[in-house]
Length: 430
Image 1: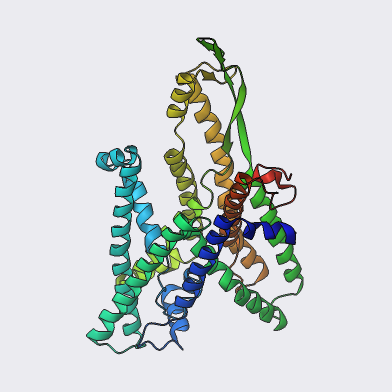
Image 2: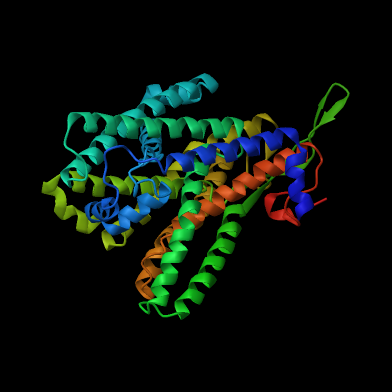
């Protein structure tokens, strides 16, 4: 195994990418511990927990790697960026100008990325204003114009910087930059969550048997997540023979892989980000304080909305990344067909039918993973361990994607597989 890990640093380009990614993650963790000047952070966690609700506070704090608890420069994390991406994704199908940009290829995507950045700045300004106002309202900082402006600038700049870091990791490092930042925040909070759970069990508030059950569930969920994440339905594609001059083309068989969980962690991240908005609005507007009882994580209304949003984004994201009409058109032009299905519209209908069945399975899986922590907490009484389904799915999904990128670099240079027996990555060890 050590020899396989050594291969990572034997490839110069891969070594540079890994070191670059680790360096950027180190910068992220350092910034998460630099508090905004002028804030009394000793009582901040208790105040924010009461203002947002303990469940929502723990959730946001987990995604920011504890930065919110310390009111650091990165307190908002990449949540404004995620929200801006969600809003733009929802607007693309209904605004023809945005739809046209999406179809223009690379230049159009650049323009959409620019819109996402400006949307991130706008949302970061709103959220930093609300956070600064909340801190002043609870008398954790001096109500001066200087603090108010410096706090807004610091929090907004921190989010913009993290957005830049995420893009740089995607371009020059390993893995998706934003996903890597979220994963780093979750991993950073994991030791504290384990320690808090141990203290709960030691104090006698939780039966020790639940510690064993937690470990079993943890391992089982990881195994199931890997299986679903890598699960595929392979559609057989047959290419007809055709003669061009003296050469014969086609006549071979291949397959079109359709993933069970096409969206990966995207639907669950989008749903989680959207559900933070109602509770935040209820916190900032006193007249809507009654709404917090319905949007608190773990409440029945919250869980129902969570499941509905996960299914919505599962199907919505699939429409963005997979177009059966386009696939059927390309197959017909290339002389390919699905055995037993006529080319053209019947092929598109067949692909749509198969995709819809897969999305049902993927949606139920994501919804079950998301709801599992709340069910387990209600059954066991463990309140401190919030690294559950959502977080675990992100860790496993991002981990698999990162390993697959590393594998791709090793394959190009004919190195041995990083993971022994790595058939689940689409490649067997040499």
